[in-house]
Image (cartoon, helix red, strand yellow):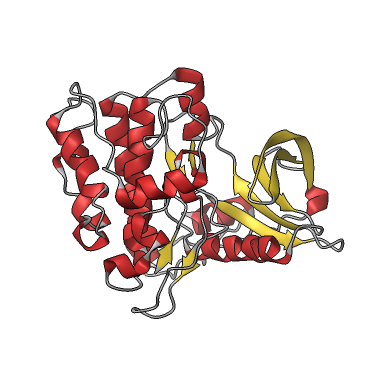
Length: 314
């Protein structure tokens, strides 16, 4: 039909082909889509600071030409070398994890002449699950089931690409006004190059580390790390349900030595009696002290707690 319109516009007095003949004409090739232009520091206008963490500052920024809003994570040149390496590693992990709706999107990264490392991230307007907990109080089970389902799908995507997060906690899980939960902050993540590669280095937030992270020999040697992400998810759900960190009493200030002892040798925190059997079972599957007994992400995705219909609850 494009050819017919073209001839009419030129007022050509040529016989037009019959409709059956038009089917034999080769289609016009679609114009190639132009690749998105790389974002540079000069393209972005800083609006305000969103937060600080892991040696960097996160800003809310706006693209000067498109008006698109992003979160810009900047690690300054004066930061220590390991922090700057972590920023570069985070950009690489996000590149490998691209395409998953449960991992925060990355729109590029760049290193400025002054040595600052910057990552342009998807903007999540409600902040972190930690900030939501502070603002609105403990979560109910239906919301927790939705959080667990989304985080598990994100971890499944990461683990299938041999990426271990190593720092799953409420402040590293972002949420937007659509209630989409996305895994973020990959500064201490690890890309496993070999199937049996050890992952027992001492990184991450110690309060959310699994017992084997402190003492790999307690589980018969070093471990592959995927189970540590499941432990972090279990503690996160407990904290969101209780309203405080499970290994501490409400308002208690953390003491590093006693916290490590509680994680490694103490009883796993229990849920109040009001908790449903399904939620109790799910948390127990995440918080097995022996990593080999902990459920995998794939197994947890089949657990009744996350398989309920999010609307009907059945």
